[in-house]
Length: 211
Image 1 (cartoon, rainbow, N blue to C red):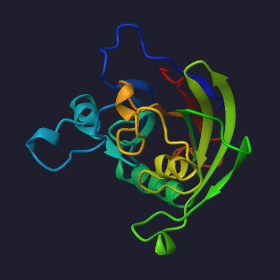
Image 2 (image 1 turned 60 degrees about the horizontal axis):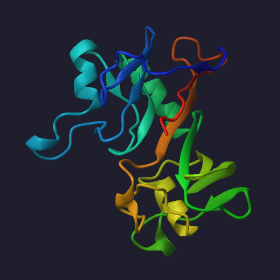
Image 3 (image 1 turned 180 degrees about the vertical axis):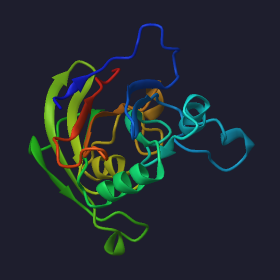
Image 4 (image 1 turned 30 degrees about the vertical axis):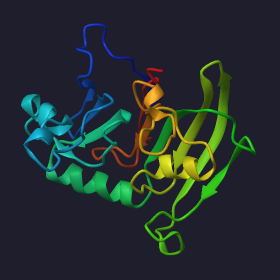
């Protein structure tokens, strides 16, 4: 299957999720920024992507997550077999994930690998690796492509902060995060083995960044 380049439909409600592809075993969806992937703690955090999707597809199951303030691609399983298959694919790093971010200044070198453990104690943190490359220098910032090898919480945000290049709009890690109306981080590509046809080329989706 060749990569698909999807954009949100013109009539898609602002701030809502979008269905990009419907298969027997999975759904490919777009999550907007400022939406939880799963319910949080407390009655004010029950509205989330999976709850909304299940209104239309009750069988949908979360396989992986995006942060509340990160937009982009997610795959949802539609049955227990697919959920187990896709969960194992993520755990064994058979899934290719690509993100785009805006930062204030270029990284040096322009292409490289960030290999820094993440945890409360940096010396005992969990091993974490992110590949990066410069995409473009723009008036509003520097666009970088990020490919996480591991999948730690806030990995991309913490790794760029450690390089002195926090992501624009990041109210946790950027000293001027409030200057932007959103976190400039977007999951732009997701490629994974198809549970129905695991020996065929991966299901491969692309979703341009909205910034």
